[in-house]
Image (cartoon, rainbow, N blue to C red; front, top):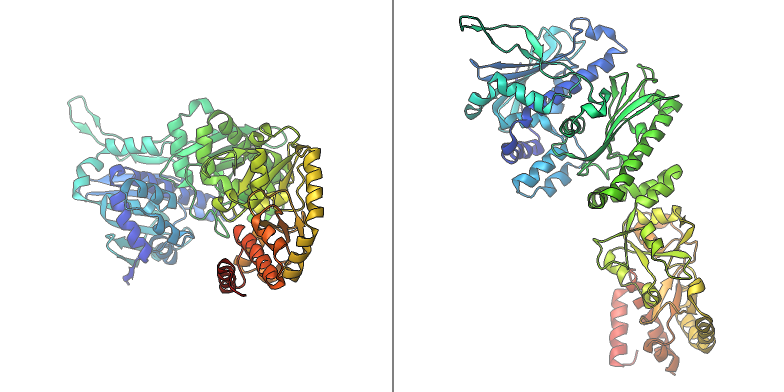
Length: 633
């Protein structure tokens, strides 16, 4: 019985975009459909490891491309895993991807830019509608009887039909009913062969087509129904590097990552010894849409002796390298390995450790020899790479060396520095790396905590990414230099403060003990202490926390995430600048009520200057107006 279904709304939008945005590169439809067919063959190989009967009726795995000039169709057939009715509706009628909403929000209307986004999203099947006004898919899942196959038909107009059919062989046939304007070109045997050689030569599955026509001595055409492979049908990663062109590497990347764009760079390596494995790992140019989802998909496929085992193999790459794409092929793991066995595999631990080092070496080489390329990489994946500082203890120093941060040394937030750069510019007598965390670049750049550092020309890192609080809690030193927050603990400039400055600080504390007590009394238990500081040169006051306490910035982030009741509420210390006119005003004021109001105003200003939230904004405004107008409070 034939049933009609409506496409998911997102599929309708995507079909429209595919047809219009990718029209300038129509040939990619064949690459995408061949890539899907190769994946289906790989999945059958894996399932057949535990059930060899799945291969019994047709053991020679392949992909067949057939052009039919009479019907004006191209058919891409595979004898892979196939689909049942539920799977075909799920795979071809909906997009069950995290990041779908974000994907559509990012679309610009610019065909060229949107083409990159579509490729990133990885929905290659729908590219069939670039050249076809109707697509028919006939599929029978391996292990299912002939009468339980399914036919799916759509014209890309918002709906599709599904019905049960008979199909003698397992696998999937994708039949493209070509648009009239595509028929002359795409029904050509030569054109199809050229597209396969250009985009799919690296596919490890034989791609078969009818032998090209030959001519008899009398000039007549000699046709044959015999099939021949039109690709090399050899796993690319098994070939010597010198035999592989950059174009072939890029095409394999597009296949393995289901990305329309090129990779930024890659590493191809073979490890021999106690562990033997080969890897071909890529750094993409653009981030996948699920990069920051709770359960992002990993991009490395696991093979054993060139037999596909699984994709999304989370244990092959740590979470902070989840954007790495490619393959790892082991000679040592058992062919019947399962995800559960992988969790306990020491062999896989060794493969992972070695592969991570290869990726880090690749990034180090790019950072050193292609700084502009690395800057582009950092803009895309920097935040996730930073996660490795806390996640990967064994490689913490290497990852820290690869990280860039905004800094007072640069003029804007788009420019950043490495920790090695920072250390190379440290002042005489400076033995610490100073940083501040804040909600955004402007808040960090203009924080009162920086005033003494700006006066002395000491560089401060401006950390505004959410992950930076996690980074600084783990990375306590770099190159033997301690990382210190300028908003925590008492100010210690070490050898950068001369004896005269230390004596001046001590005298200021003695001379202003009275105003300190006045402010303490006014603020009560709002603060843990009030003290005189030399870290301020222009502002009246700032808030600091203890050296080992949670920063105010982190506390605000946790509260915003709904964890406010689970965090300790450490009261800050108010540090005052005794030379500021507001502090002098409190000091000279004889009316205690007025003193209290000025003290509270100074505290509220300090809280606002670092991005804090006032408990009672209306009261703050009323108090400020009254003090400005000098009316009774």
